Image (cartoon, rainbow, N blue to C red; front, side):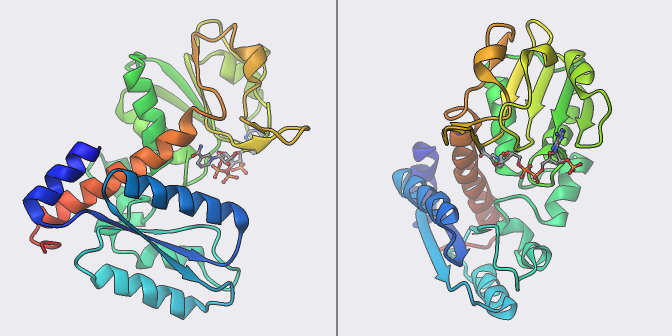
Length: 272
Ligand code: NAP
């Protein structure tokens, strides 16, 4: 990543720029944003945070997004969610210029993903796919189940697995006989938000298990959606929480920013 950034800087006379808007004072959001800023800095990108008060109006926040859309040195824009209640998340997403939408959540990028066209892909789903690819897990023809159907994680993961020729089941809170459906799968992706929901009786021996969940257990420790200690002896491969998908999300955010920067200069925008 740092090499790609250095090459971009040498060619174009500036570093790729990632701009994050943080509205309000949610402590967890502040930590996530700080981590993104530090990671951008580490690989030589410009990482800038725009802090707005919790009382910010929707129009003020959208005006900041439009300013960043128009700024040539800005390659990636990310608005940290949740936004304050008076601001519509949907309007924020549709205001970000699709070519700078490094979270990949604008309807244009969602449409490109499901149509098989190149575009910006959400970071956590990209991280899931990178983990599978780097681990040499065979995907074509395999049965995959994704538990959770959010726009942020579940649906894009399903689209990406489908694009790799998996046979995909997209499960959710209304899915009947979920443990049995999971037991049929070669690949289980848990993106629910319920501590240790997936137990050993849900997993077929040798299956690959990717745990996206980030929860707190009874003792307040960070844990995933999978009961790691109980499932690990059965699974063929499994990711831990913390330390599995989480770090991949930030890595893919930086990768998306570099991709956006390259695409913008190739189209004649964003040259210094
Ligand atoms: P979300 O928007 O709350 O979606 C949760 C999904 O899980 C929904 O589709 C819901 O079904 C489904 N669900 C809830 N209870 C269920 C149950 N008992 N059985 C089956 N499905 C159930 O959450 P999200 O944003 O996708 O995030 C999911 C988890 O991933 C959270 O723990 C979040 O913190 C974590 N996360 C981690 C990262 C990372 O970088 N590691 C990034 C993003 C999210 P319905 O649609 O029917 O309600």
